[in-house]
Image (cartoon, rainbow, N blue to C red):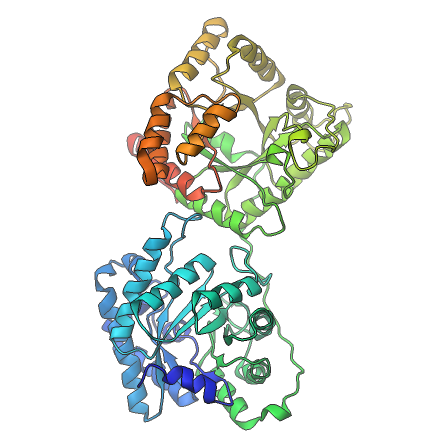
Length: 632
């Protein structure tokens, strides 16, 4: 068929063009294991795939999508099948084409392209050009095998969707449908709105802009209306799940039945959608119901009286531990990796959670959540800590500045933090408000850090508040304090350190270390007067990003002196400066390991993929040396 037949069909049909429904749901229902590679069935069990195509065609589908949703080099590599990307994709097109031919119906074949299954920078370590290359490899194979169009679907990252569209434009001349999926709050996983998604995919060159998977038809109708309002001249597609999945008797069930989809097919048509299909949980019966509804109910007879039932989401919560996991790891001699994250400036937490997930996957032990760094207005770190612990499953350390809090608020905030499961607290003075967004804001405080340390360790952890009144049961906070191993006033820093120890500090987070010998010299000086420091130290590591960043830190940030060797290396690295910064960080970590019990990474510019690469490298090296198993 000519390459323009799909777009011609869209523009000439009075009804939306009907795609098929779920492939994975049907494969599993007919015996395929979720642990197997569904895409490889194109080669190992082609009859099963062809049977599903045939059933959808007979149900009324005008377009069938190839069984190639995960047939890219990254996902296939998990099954050892990366070398046969092209073969699996070609087989997918051939099977769909044969099913269409055998049905004696005019059916188009859409080459199905799903997400890569890896995180893209800055929330992952796969660069955008690498993603585009992987997409192009798959799309080229689909096009050469004779697909009539390309559908890019179930993408959660707008950057990834744009790279996929660009790859399709580079690899072939076929029409492109680009479809994204949304969370319960009608945002993508990284927080992008439907309007933003529609505008950017339209600008990227997608012929049809879509929303698929997500929840049931009701949510997708709401989302597509917002998309259409943002880009009224665009074409739109919808392929909803059969409602939010729920687990019943050990099986995943979808609540929305075929008749319900038939009703919503009319609502989608009324909203101006030109492509309709189904995603997870849908069957040939769902497609048949939509086909029947569209063919038998004229637009003039459409009435709207629809509702939908949805299942509650599954929440992944940390167990209700009474003590700090960080404390347990340090006691066990684990070389700990802590990474600092700043709360978002607005309501969306999607990108922050994606970064936390990347760090957790890399092996980070704890996420440090800052509190209004540089006195800039941000979301409460209490909320961020709870979200990370419950949704990502990694422990947090709450930064707790004393500045701007009176004694009543300090104690109330501590109780609140403990109630939501926070066990690690890092006590600091906090940045003065005059440097931030609201210089006129109140800057008073009732306690200095040593006073707050004493309040927590000798009060709350003993079951008493500041006045000596019982609080019901003791808290179990593991409390950290700040330490500067490169202070120009070493004697004064040691005196402050002694006060913090006397007040009950459990561990220390240091300022960025760029001179390990100087840091060791500080600890040697302390040991000469008071004996070896017997509390864990997490040494600050600040990865340099480029020469300009290094120069700024060296010249404009008090307390940071970067050796000339590192400044020169960053300058000489050119475009490879971020990788050189990682090499320098790893060298520094190796040098501090003899006297530190872990690292405290401070990634700059939200480049969590850099922190993840450092954490992964450190964990692999340490665990290889100690014989520990790396848990991911």
